[in-house]
Image 1 (cartoon, rainbow, N blue to C red):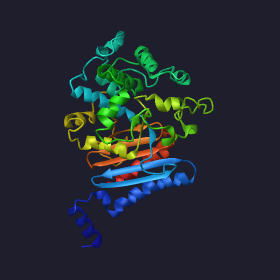
Image 2: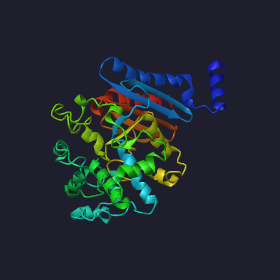
Image 3: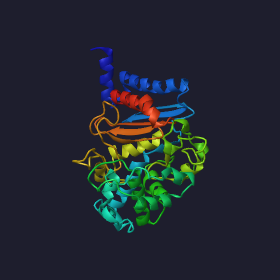
Image 4: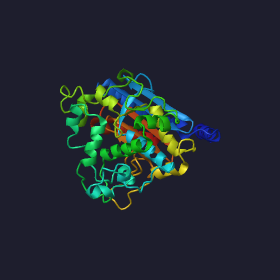
Length: 365
């Protein structure tokens, strides 16, 4: 028997995970090298990489992210966190996925709005738009989140509810709003008490929480999408992704802050639910397709479309990306969780870093 084969057998007998093998570690080092290369080239300012399988963890930080615990604006990774808050209320019998939204938001009752259910909000099948037509104007004048809610309640639907999938941040906003109306407390506080703290996610908040902007990594605004302030960086300085306004707004569709280790804890709670925060059946229901027969599969808050994450991931992989340059995913087949947080907006980092690094991590398993 060759020494390498013998060593791998010893690792298996000791309960070590496949990622502990030297060859697989090489894939992770290669992924880390992608970030180091872009830091050296001046394209990327900051990033963290957090990969875990079983008891083995691979953690790296790059550039202005001085430690793997650096806090980033995670953008739409907030969506499955918001959905989890809704599902906790479902567990408690305070709402059901089949409930009409107007049961909780009575003014949301005109025309086809009466047909929209809680499930439609969480699966992006409500017909609501991603962003409001007046989105940038609202941000420019520092509109409170309640005004976004009021506008979302009245904004025209794009299609009859339940007939197709179309990504919709405004549906996630109304999901958070109905939670506020049920619990009678601010949604960021509810998430912190019911999700973040029980999971030990002490460096996570919807909005800034107790953190300061100086505690976080800043986004590279010059590469951001228009809604991030990238269309005119100078004019958008007081409302872009780095502004006190946006960082403190607590938008439930994209305004959370977190770290690689914290997000990994969140993902692992779906891989190995222990019943301490939510029931095993609740976790399982959130990472399977609820859009059978429509144009794209979707979990409850989670993306589950095959090929969305690393190219060697199984069809059961779930997760979410964020426009600020982030992605987080887990694969139930291998038990791997992967969290990549960068300062480089996704319109650049998807092709340059997020996708190729996820591919390498999926190969390592």
